[in-house]
Image 1: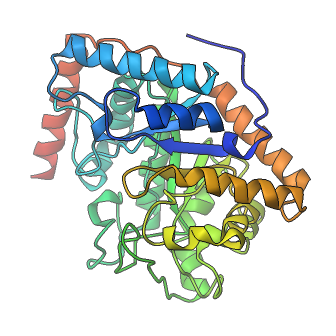
Image 2: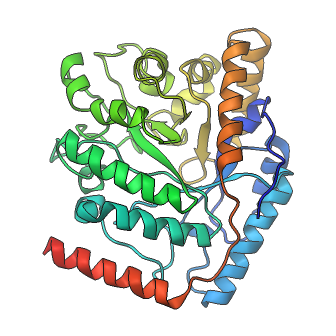
Amino acid sequence: MTTKDTPLLPQPGNRLLIGLRPSPDLDPLDRQLLRSLQPAGVVLFKGNFDHEAPAPLFLARLRQLLADVRSAVGRQRILVGIDHEGGRVFRLPERYSNFGYARQWRPFAAEVGAAFGRELASLGINLNFAPVLDVDSNPANPVIGPRAFASTVESVCDSAKAFMEAQLALGVQACGKHFPGHGDTETDSHYALPLLAHDRDTLMQRELAPFRAMASSRLPMMMSAHLMVPALDDAFPATASSRIVQDILRRQFGFKGVITTDDLGMNAVQPMLDDGDFVTRIAQAGHDVFMMCSAFISTDRLYEFTAHLARALEQGRIQADAWRASGERIARLLEASMQHDVVALDASLIDRHRLLAERITQSAS
C-alpha cells in the first residue's frame, strides 16, 4: 500500500509518536487523542497484540487496529514503531523470532536485521527503535548490558551498520539509540535520571564514537537518552540540552536525519513535564519528534505538552526556521517509509528464521 498524502506537519501534535494503551483494539481515549493531535505515528507494545489468538485472528485484529489508527489520524501515511531488539525487548507473540540479545547475535547482525525486517513489515510496522549504539562498558549497568552489541566501539559500529542496512532493505526504518550513550550508567532511566560522569575526551572516544560514525551512514533516525552528562552540559539532561543534541549530534557530527526523544513518560524526566520552560527546552534542544507512551504515563498529558509547545511557538521562543526544517525532516521520513499491509508469513520463512536462531544459540554456547 502506498500513498501520497504526507503533510509538512506544521502543528505541535504532528511531531508526536504516541504509545498506544495496552489493548489489541483502539482504546476510545487513544482514538480521541489521535484525532485531536494527528501525530506522526504510533508505538506498539506487547499489550497491542492478541497473544492468545490463533494466527488468522491475531492478524485480523492487528490489521483492524492499524486501520483504526489511520482513520483517527486522518492520514494513511504514518510511522508504526516498535522496540524490537530481541532478548527481553520483545513485544510479539512467541511464533515470531526472538534471537536473544544483540550481544548473542552480533556475528549474525545482517541476517537478524533481514529477519526482523521481514517479520516486522508483515505486521504493518515500518520503524524499529534499533540498533542500540551504546557501548557496554559497565558490568553494573541495569538497563543496557547485553542489549549492546559489544564493549568496543569498532564492534558496535560494524554490527549496527550491518543490522541497519539489512533491515532498511526490507522496508523497516532504523533508529540508533541512546544518544549520547547509556552504556556506562548505574541507573535505569525508566525509573530515575542517570549520571554519566566521564570527561569530554573519554565521552568522545567511547560513548559518542558510534553515534559519530553512524551520523554519516544511511541511518534515518536517532534517539536521545534521558541522561545528565556534566562534561557536556552541567545544567540540563540530554533531553533538554541544545549543547548535546543540537551542537554535537546535529552540528558537530552532521546528522541530517530525524532526532526523537526517548519516551518522555519515563521517570527520569516525566516529573519535569509540568514545567513549560522544560518542555520548550526539549524542542529547542533540536528534537524533531517527541515520544510519549502509555507504559509509564497517561498519554493524555500530551494535550498539555503540545499546548506548551504552541505557546512557545507563538511567543517566538522556538525559532520558526528551525521548526520548519524539523517538519521537513519528518515529512521526508514519512514519505520514505513504506506503508505495509498486515499479512501472514510463509511457513518456509519462519523455518529459515528458526534455523538462524539455532545457529545463533550454537555459536553462543
